[in-house]
Length: 246
Image 1 (tube, rainbow, N blue to C red):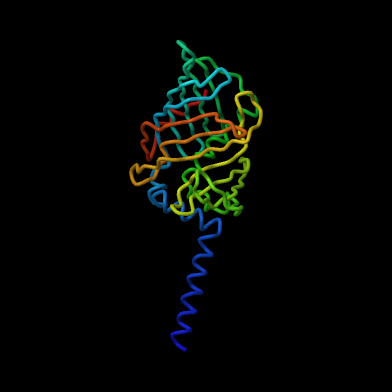
Image 2: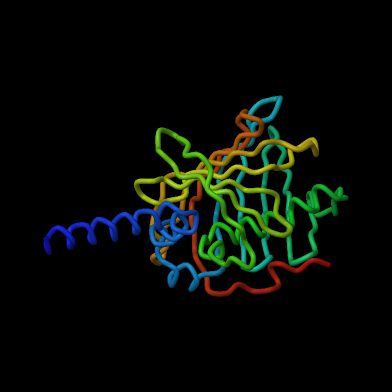
């Protein structure tokens, strides 16, 4: 009888543990651990990347190279050199808190309210990519949605809501805990709202943090962007001058 009760207690404890892992917060906690753990993720609230990729356009794919820098909270700088035949256009986007700017070949670009809001939201999305901030219930509300498959992987889906953020759905590989995809409402090149779906792959360690070195973006189900990270450097701090917005 004693062994039976002990067995029941063990089964109940196991079931409670499994149930906790299945909650949205449990799924995110598993992801935090899979991506290197909270201590490693918190140590590097900033980073830089060298990027190569292509953008899908009506006239054909356009190759680009780029440099990305971010610092949590609220700072992002993206420089993209896009090839148009023999010509190149350099686009620079900078977000610093409530301020945002864009230039093309050094000349300021007028931003619509929608594009400005999208740029500012991109900084919050970078913060989400660190995952551990999602466990702050005073800032983020998490809800479980129906499991889904991403590139053949069974994924737990977590809906994220927060002030200043359009709904974001995060897809976590149920086997590894790694972030497989993200769905949100984005802005297309024509300024119109699109269903933006981003997949992440080719994870590699950098200073103890697991980083996806490849991603693909679709807009309304159609290929839009593919990116390879040629180099990623996590950082504890970056020079504030990188994110200057005049």
